[in-house]
Amino acid sequence: MNPPTPKQPRDGRTLSRVRAVSRAVSILRSFSVDRPYLSLSEIAQATKLDAGTTRRLLVTLRDEGLVQQNPGTGQYSLTLSVLELASAVPEGVALKDLVDSRLRQLATETGTTAYLSVAKGAEALCLARYHGESAVEVRWWSVGETMPLNCGAGPRVLLAHLPPEDQKAVLARPLARLTDFSETDPAHLRRDLDRIVAQGWVITQDDVAAGLSAMAMPLKNDRGETVAAVSIGGLTPQIVGRNQNGLLGQLDAAVHDMARLVRTVDGHKSSGEIKVVS
Image 1 (cartoon, helix red, strand yellow):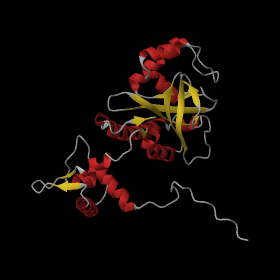
Image 2 (cartoon, one colour; image 1 turned 30 degrees about the horizontal axis):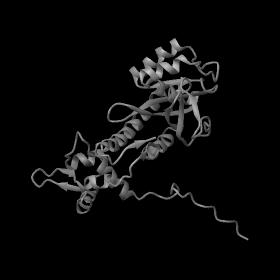
Image 3 (cartoon, one colour; image 1 turned 45 degrees about the vertical axis):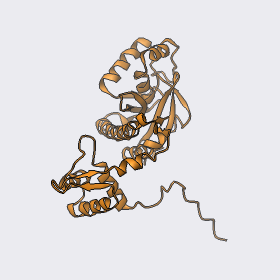
Image 4 (tube, helix red, strand yellow; image 1 turned 45 degrees about the horizontal axis):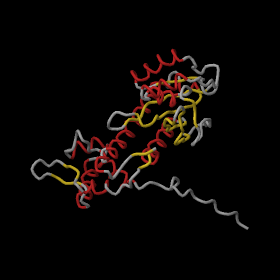
């Protein structure tokens, strides 16, 4: 008897990607509020596609009603049909669903464990966790579990960006000690929180588990409010040292992409049709 055929994941992660679709999406994403009109060469440069491929895709997108070309200037822009697509997004868009793909990509690119977390009372709640292609998988803080706000990079970022009264209330309580390196002095922690807000990121070491480090940045909406923390973690030599600046750059790029998605959805909240929820 032949062994049973293993079931394929239902999310399609093992399927090959359709390159033409990815390229067309990259063209649509090349437009922005600051750059609503782009020439063929500007689009080709932004997408890193050759001019011939870019033009064929633009013609297809034009025929589908998503892109238009000004006959006078030759520049391209998106059409109102894109807004019609946006209006079909269901009410109550889950934050995790919105940034899920980019968070997975971050884990893969960095070979670390990537986390998405939100503040929940006096704790940080893990909404998503993905392991990159690494020999060591950091399995602390599973999805649905909470972490003290004073321990770990993601929780520390969330604490730093809490409203002043909420932050004051957290610091007034006894602070958790997960290891000997957990910061439990409110005065020291207060100074660290100010530094996190000023520099926009934090790296923590050994305060959740010995030998583990993490770095995190805030994910903000279009009003500058921190809606979540994005963090990556791994063994200390993987995070701290010669890899540190490169990882910070990759984390910053990922958070920038996620923030753009959040702002895009959040910008439609005035119509009452779409809202981002955690």
